[in-house]
Length: 127
Image (cartoon, rainbow, N blue to C red; front, side, top):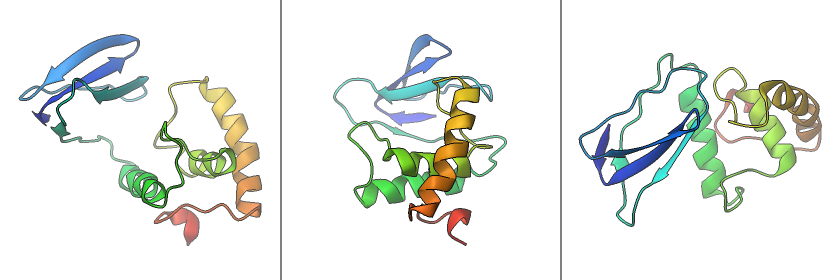
């Protein structure tokens, strides 16, 4: 539910602007991303069903952002991305490349990243 401002969603290749007071539902497994539409900040609430490990995913992502470990586009360095992708494989996937490419890449980069000391904040990966 968008509470203030507007968000633009691209869901399975189709764009839709969602304004204050509106909501959008995205079926599980559907490629999507979103961004703030316009110059006004947006406030919104997300709900995930099933939630899986979503809370830990966002805690880790925001922890990396606060530590300055994400690029301007919001992505971690390659080896850390491998650890991240492997840790949260059952929860979140990238919109591209295809899932089988991601799975293979994370299967290689995840263990290599861990071996070289790449860790995620606030996740089961660190216990």
